[in-house]
Structures are given as C-alpha cells and as structure tokens.
Image (cartoon, rainbow, N blue to C red):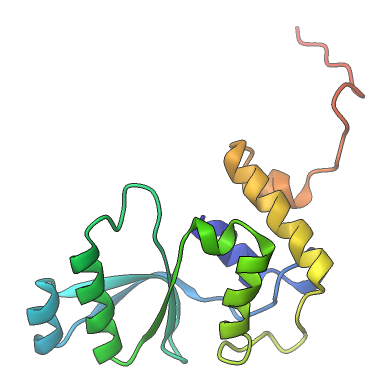
Length: 160
C-alpha cells in the first residue's frame, strides 16, 4: 500500500498522479538524546518523507504498528524533531473520497515537479482503482500502469 500511495502522489499527471517530487522511501531519522529517551530507540523510519519540508507519511496496516503507545511515542519524537507526520491506513487510501482528503493536506505543503499540475479527479480515481486492484489481485504495479486492457476471453493462449 505504501507503493500505491507513492505512485498516486508522484506519478505524472498524464498517468493520473499528482506529480509531487519524489519522497525518500523508508527514511532513517537519527533521534536526539531526548527523543531516544522517549522512544527507546536510536532511530525512526518514515515510509515516505519529503526531507526539505519535514513532511512524512506513515502507512499503518497489516501486522505492523500494532502497539499504539509505541507508535504515539514515535510520532511525538518525530514531531519534536520537526517532522509533520500524516498517518495513512487502508481507510484513507481505499477510496478516492478519503484519498482526496489526504491530498488536501499535502497539496500546498509538498512541492510538485515544475512541469506538473494537480491531476484531474477522474484520472486520479482511475489510477487509484487500477493500483488497488493490482495489489489485491497480486498483479504488480507495472501491469496496473502499463499493460493493455485485454478483455477476458478475447485471446487464446497455446502453451507447449
């Protein structure tokens, strides 16, 4: 799902993405002594991080982030270090309406590549649908983005 989020935010407009500059993925942030005391660790990772703006996105899903107290301490330590962290889960990216709410928080805070403008809602909705389908059907992102649409049953395959 982190990949879906990264694609939605960074792909160019002609593919339905927002054209934001590429974030660093899984950025390791070294913590100060006070932050280490707070978290009990020397570092924290941020799933998608725009370092020049100190804005990060964390995807909370699956078996990860099950310790709410540790997650809160981690977000507090990152806030103390100057980071704004947005938490994203399947409810915030599983539908376009919820994704649009997240996008509203980011649109003026995260810079876009110079040649990109906001994606059209219809293009963005279509991209999100394809990416979510690819993850649920284990198709892979390349097939979701670039494969031709071939209706089932329209081709016969011969395997030897």
